[in-house]
Amino acid sequence: MEGQENVEKGKIAERGGETKLFGKYSFEGIEVRDPGIRQYASFTPVVYPHTFARHANKQFAKSKVNVVERLANKLMRGGTGGKLGGKLIRTHGKLQGKKLRVLKIMEDAFAIILAQTKQNPVQVLVRAIENSAPREDVTSVRFGGIAYQVAVDVAAQRRLDMALRNITVAAIMGSFNKKPTLAETLANEIILAGKGDPNSYAIKRRNDTERMSRSAR
Image 1 (cartoon, rainbow, N blue to C red):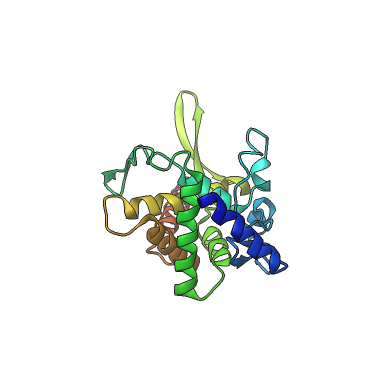
Image 2 (cartoon, rainbow, N blue to C red; image 1 turned 45 degrees about the horizontal axis):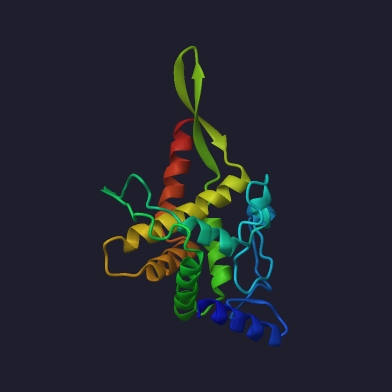
């Protein structure tokens, strides 16, 4: 049934003369202000963002995968495996390998974003990524048996990955053993990060990362 629904969405999008995400959201006119992210973020028009790992195990091939699909891939995780927000977050692999289920969650989240912001959810996601992508990080360097923390610039590819990871971790944390659904917490995090709201977990993580790098200069 779910596969049949996807086919019908594709037919609807084709009739309109434009390929739209989930048959609803246009990729035309998407503005990416950050030149580094623009280089590695793909917005190839797709109805259903699922490439079936066609670009797996190929160097820099992630840059050819639509950003919406990369966000879905980040959601397919078995918990954080550590303490976040003062508690241990483990989802016991409930989303691992369940790509269609994750895409349905994202479709619901995008509907919430459209209802609350009256903007194209893809554009809101782009703003969220730009606002939550750190520009500096720290790395450990060893001199004479002593380890030092040194500030380094973050590569554009990694900046995009870190932003997507923090957005999805915030959604998982917000819905873990709580009333809000994952779609609701994902939509809320994207909206907050898109506005640059300091209450966004992804924005907080970016600020913490850049603060540590400033102290390590």
